[in-house]
Image (cartoon, rainbow, N blue to C red):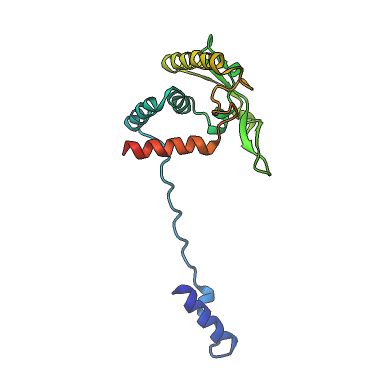
Amino acid sequence: MIVWTSKVLKYAFKVGLIDSNPFDRVIVPKKPAKRKKDNFYTKDELETFLNGARDAGMMKYILFRLLAFSGMRIGELIALEWSDVDFASQSVSINKTLTLDKYGQATVGSPKTTNSNRAVLLDDVTMTILRQWRAEHARRIIYFGKPRNNLVFASEHGGHLSNGTIKGWNKKSLKTRD
C-alpha cells in the first residue's frame, strides 16, 4: 500500500497536479530483522540424536559425537587425518578444512581464519570411542586393502566425505527421531 501510494503521489507531482509530494517527508520504518532459528541441540536432544547415530553405525556415531564435543566445522572434520589425532594428550589438531573451489571440486586448505588453527582437548568417552574407531578402521584396511589416504572418516571409495552427505545423515536421523 505504501509503495502504491508513493508512486501515485510522485506521478501527481510530476504532472503538476500537486505542488509537492508529501511522501518525500515520510520515513518508512524498517521491518525488524527476522530472528534466525537456533541451530543447536539441547542436552536431551543431543543425547537422543547420538543414540540414534549409534544405532546407525560406529562411524556415524563417532563422527557426530566429535562434531558435538569438539566444536569442529563439518569441513574441518572431513579433512581430519589420523596424524591430527593425539591419543597421548587426548586432543585433535585442527589445521585444515575441505572446501569447494570455484569449479566445484573438493580441495583441502587452511581453515577459515588463522585463529581456526587450534588444538581441541577431548573428553575420555570421545577418545575411547575414537580409539575403537581407529581399531575398526585398521581392521577394514586389513580386509579391504590399503586406503589411499589417512582420513579418519572416508567415503566408501576411500575419498573425502561430502558436506552434503553429513548434512543428509543429520536430516535423516532427525526424521527417524521424530
